[in-house]
Length: 255
Ligand code: SF4
Figure 1: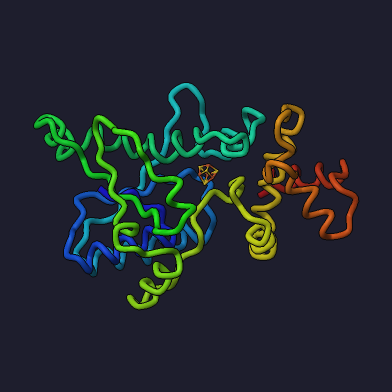
Figure 2: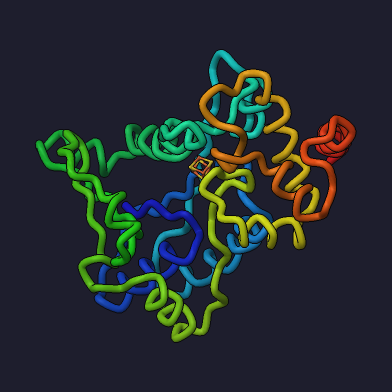
């Protein structure tokens, strides 16, 4: 099964699998409900390519809370007054909203059940590239149900090579896939988001403002800085003015 993030690496991964003649049995995209517009826009491109490649269609899975009504990671952050866990150096946001819905699907997927009945493991294919930062994300532990495989690393494809591969396939290069308020967002990416999707930035700042009274170890979505302060300072406005915060929150509700 392929864990598809709809970004550059996943796109290159699928192309590479096709070029080496491997057809996945299952391709899952875990939707946090808080992806960027470009990522949702790429769904159609992905599906058309998969059809042309003779690959199975993409299946979109999403976390459904039983006891809480959150329909997205954004909902959860606003309800609990917290930032996504990555801001605190933890990974439960992606474990809960990405890994768990995929595993839940597999727990009811007959080929996986059959595989496990025979004492085998499902091969989970992930698009970590051959660059050093993805190298740190590679899982070293043994999982009782899954074997993790990282073909891009095996073929020595770093991020630039992935982009080249996508272009060579005649496909548009997708945007970096992540929640629009992801604490891993770099400052130039935040600026891009501000230019292209100011309404999303206002919603991200609303999360930050809602969490602010509870923050002890971090200052905001940038961890050692709040997005609102950094953007205001760039614009020459007083950092974190109450008025701006209120405006941001009001705008987020309207949007
Ligand atoms: S993209 Fe960022 S915020 Fe969203 S689940 Fe992953 S780590 Fe968390």
